[in-house]
Each structure stands twice: as structure tokens, then as C-alpha cells.
Image (cartoon, rainbow, N blue to C red; front, top):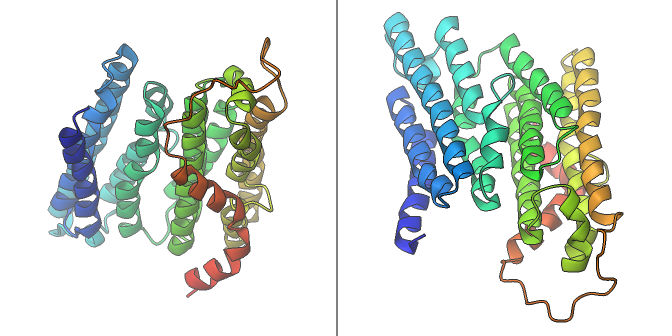
Length: 348
């Protein structure tokens, strides 16, 4: 892609998200979301592959449906209350419609079915943008319209953790596994959103770091399914050695960074007298942990048939930037000791 065009599109992505962050009016927030969507579509389709075209079409239809619903809900709220402000959404009908539309935008279950199919048709770089940056603006709107007590958010979060765990069990395509991993993590954030918004933001930060590590690791290995992970040790032995730690951190095992947000969320749910919900959420994490363990096993403990037993001396030096992967992998593995500092920041 032409560097000038790429710069314009990336600027549009940043501009759309920034407009949504700064807006207090529904029309301005809606405009930011639309700029965001229109800026990423050329990035998704620039390979001109039939799968990329199909994925882009599905993404556009899902996002257009969600944006139209948000516009309808905001107009309904203005009609009922006379207010266009985001924080003045008080009536149950527009609030419910907006939450469902934002859930469709970020891919929460049961409105998640577009996300795995879209990610499967994209390359890892665009998939990383879709799984991280594109979640920020809708999540900021969710934080602003937060109702005082919403069973809908708890239902969406619980369904996301359970459905993503079950659906990811029999997947062999890495991008679909990453999509279900994204849905499950967003479910954890939604569970705790109304009880502790700062904790939800902390979980989002950990999710961005861990997901970036996973995407960049698979991009460096140039692998798209579970079977080809077995060749990793001959191509990038250091990354193959670190990969189980990154994947198990995504699964939430101690003493890795991914354990901290799950631990804090379960603690918060228990403090809110929701022990049953915390137990179901913890059990759903075991489902996700299974397919992370499966990927770790395929990457480090299996050998591809007819692999050379020695590293190839003629292999070219990689052209991928490895510094971002190094930084995010270090954060993914070693941030758990900073949990008390994080807790002191989010505790009022």
C-alpha cells in the first residue's frame, strides 16, 4: 500500500477514536465511530483476496447495523428526555438498545458470530488493529452510559466467557482461536464493568498487551493453523520457548501477568455477594485455558514430520520488527508483581 494512503488511513483511525473519546454528544460520538469503521475497511481489503473481501463485507454490515442502532437509540433518548448528551441516557429502552449495539460493535456474545469469520479472512497486522484499537471507542461509550444496575451487562459478560470457551475448543485456525480469546476477555471486562470501572480499564490494558504479544508471535512465525506451529522451533527457537508463557498468561495462570485481572475480578465479584457468578466465570476460564495449553503443546512439545534436526544455516535474517514483540512479551510475562501498585491506583 502507498505510504501516503496508509498514513491517511491510520490518521483516520486515530481521529475517529479520539473524537469518540472526547465527545459528550451522541451525534459526535456516532461520527467518530463511523470514521473509525471507514478508515479500517481499506486496510482490511487491500490484499484483494476473496476471503479478505468477504471478511470486509461482513465487518461493514455488522458495524453499519450497530451504528444505525446507536443512532436510533440516541434519537429515541432525545425524543423521550430532550437530551442528546451521552451521560443523560436514563430511559431503559434507549439504554438497552445502545448496550446491545455496542456489544455488536466489539463482538460480545451472543452478537459475536461475525468476529471469528472476519478475523479469519485478515492478515495478522490488520487483525491486531481490529482486536485492540477498534475496541477502545465502543468501550469508552459503554463506560459513559453505565447504568447503576444492569443484569444485561452481566448476562452478556457471562455468555461471552462461556460461549467463547466452548467454541474455541475444536478450532484449528489460529486467527479464530484468537477471536474467541478476544470474546472471552471482553466478557470478563463486561462482568465487572458496573461494579468497578477502573478494574475493567485495568483488565482492558492487560488484554491489549497480551493480545498484541500473541498476534505478533504468530506473525513472526508465519503460521495460520495449529499443525504448522510444530515448525516454530526450527525457525524461531527463542520465540518458541517464550510462546507457552505468553499463551498461558492469556489463559490467566499464575505467576504470569494474565492472572492479575482475573484474580481481581473474581475478588470484586465475591465482594459484591456474587459468589455463584464468580464460580461460573472461573470455571469458564478453564475452557479457554484448554485451547491455550493445546497451542503451547503444539508449539513446543511436538515435532513436525520430516523436520530437519539442525537449524538451517542459510536461513535469511527476519525482516519483522522484533522490538515491539520483545516489549509486549516482557510485559505479558512479568507484570504480576506490580499488581499491588495497580490495586492502589484503582481503589478509591
